[in-house]
Amino acid sequence: MEHEQPNVQEILTILRKWGIETLGQLAAFKKPDLRTRLGPHAVRLWERANGTATRLLKLVQPSESFEENFEFEHDIETAEPLLFILRRFLEQLTLRLNAIYLAAAELTLRITFSNPPQVRHGTDWSDWRNGSAAADKQIYERIFKIPQPSNDVDLLFRMLQTHLETFKSEFPIVAVALSAKPIKPATQQFGLFETALRNPQQLYETLARLSALLGSDRVGTPVLEETHQPDVFRIEPFAWNLNAEDFPHRLAPASAPLPEGKGRVSTQSHVALRRFRPQKSASFFTSEHIHLQSAQISGKVIERNGPYFLSGNWWDEKSWSRAEWDMQLENGELIRAHESEGTWKIDGIYD
Image (cartoon, rainbow, N blue to C red; front, side):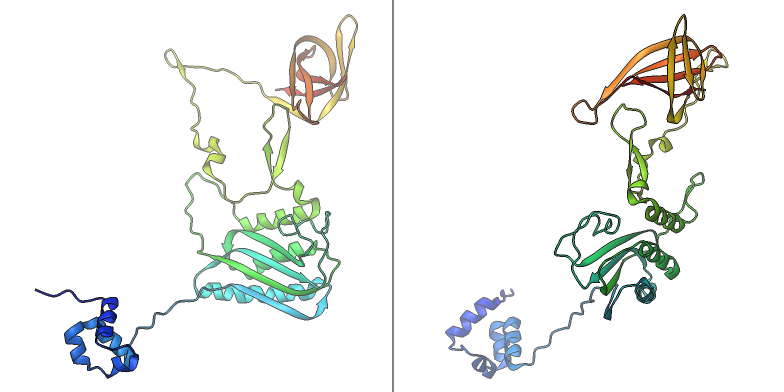
């Protein structure tokens, strides 16, 4: 029957009872006697007291940092020195990423100014730190999302160059830093009937140039507003990662016509409204008959349905109301028109 070995706290209590209270007294004790009486735990304490204990070294791999920075000896006011340094940064970063089989998923550019810039709202500082800035900050930061992870130096450099072409500052630059977020290279197998972008990087560069020319608020993805007001939408930033639920029509199978009887298929037709953008101004003249007059469409109204009243946003300054009519002209054209605040406009024509 084996006796249970005492733990370290019990060993220290026993040693004190023996009159051993210092490291020297413990080191002077005989090692075999200590092993016989108190077991292996006491032997390890004896070895530590004599300096003969060995401990395996646990290696800790430091986290890899993909960041480059540089401080200029003299303040710079042109883009050429900045682009030269950024090119060197990209060469170093991609070289280190390739060495461990990773790719850059996004780039973060930081520019330090000699004087803290003031908070301004305009075209010069529209990209301040994702749309906001603090008065005590003197670092401009911009994150570049890469649609498809890549280590192509030329491609990454064009992204930075396109942005800096329209970058303006009233303060000289004293330092610059560039960091890359690593990720494993994307591997994707597309479906047989699925279409994909041939060159996502080229689309990203095109969007960046359009944003520089037109403004970031005019480039993106149109999203319909939650209202019944026709042709009302907002622009959201272009998103690269699209979920399947964002496009339910891609998952829904095409509706097949239902058979009627033996071998008969329903041939129900649908009428589409071809909208005019912008809407066409029109005038209506009433005598014995109603006549429509506009620059594109004119004629006698032989039939009309309506009015269909629509309104919304009554609770704020965006309130709207209109009365819509469906009208058929003498020449057979079927149009939709609406009246709002005493003016008539033609929305479109039915095909």
